[in-house]
Image 1 (cartoon, rainbow, N blue to C red):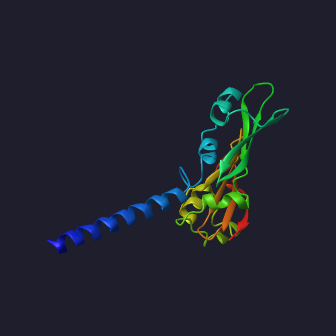
Image 2 (tube, rainbow, N blue to C red):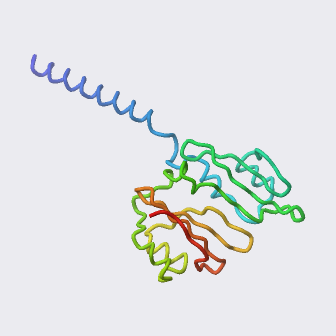
Length: 181
């Protein structure tokens, strides 16, 4: 009987210790997903939205300069700036841009699935479209900016903080690229 009670006591202590360690570890983990809510909010924005629709997603702008509206969002535990151009005549969004490719935010976009080993294909033009980038880099990338003409820029970040930023024309073809791999 003493052995059963001792075993039960040891088991209870072990489970309590395990629960306490698990609770402490959970407190150290960031709330929500790894990117924070900033990129998630940015991803909801679309060309053609109104100022009030943008404000409903991002809150009030931190500053406004003519048609340029600047919002602060949180990414990787730091404040990041989102720029939204709102046409003064139509009142509709014509350009969206986030500073997510800067070094202090990139870690939030690192992905073990992203493979930048074939990035030289951009230079040889073997990789010459968005779909070819997705296939070569193994992930869809993260949208950094888009304009009313359909030009888009995406970011890919691998697990070692290697990154590639690629701008695509409206037809999906590669326009420019740059990064460190």
